[in-house]
Amino acid sequence: MKKSIAFILASASATAIAVPASAQDNSAFTGPRIEGIAGYDISKAGSDVDNDLNDEDDQSIDGFMYGVGIGYDFAVNNIVLGVEAELTDSTAKSEIDDGDLEDLGFGARLKTGRDLYLGARAGVLANPRTLIYVKGGYTNARFDLLADDGSTEIETDLDLDGFRVGAGAEYALSENSFVKLEYRYSNYSEGEFDFEDNDFFDDDTGESGRFDADLDRHQVAVGFGYRF
Image 1: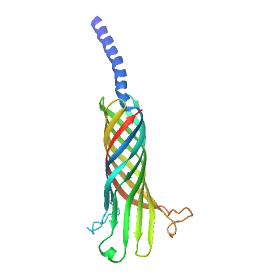
Image 2 (image 1 turned 180 degrees about the vertical axis):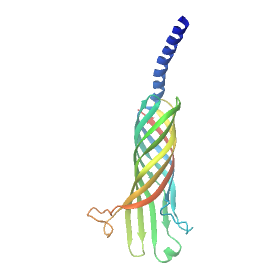
Image 3 (image 1 turned 30 degrees about the vertical axis):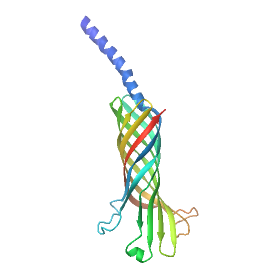
Image 4 (image 1 turned 90 degrees about the horizontal axis):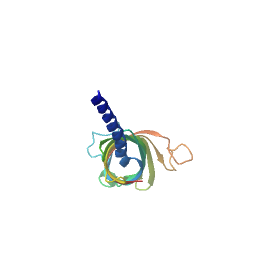
């Protein structure tokens, strides 16, 4: 009986010690954070609008993505929950400046602009210094469109709304600094043009009526950040 009581007391003591230790392990992934982000960015026509019949159509644009992010994380036992926001840009663009269209005097350019993201993430500790997480939320992307028919040039912003999901791993270099690697997929399903002097807009704001869209965006990003 004495051995049993001693074993129970020892087990309870070990558990009492282990719980604060587990909470302390989470401390490298809690609190406010700021980070720089960079990586590969590709936007592609979604399945509803892609054109598999014409191989000459440029249905994707890719480039270098860069930006900043902020967030706040807190721990619930061994689970880390957080909210986050990002502002990024990209060098991806596409131009129609040769071939039959150029011979007819037509030209066009599509260039990526700023991308806003607001969402949340949830993760678990793979070890005391590594967090594995999933994320998701709202994203709004802007693309700059320039069209020229040889006599008239029109430039407008295309704003697209959609969702983003992703997954990644974050490694704590110290209690205040970290690096991370993640994959993100975004789909934009609604949009509007932002320009005047066009019959497509339906009010005095210079914005067109909203329309359905289908644009997929894939990104592989690395980040380096500081936690306060």
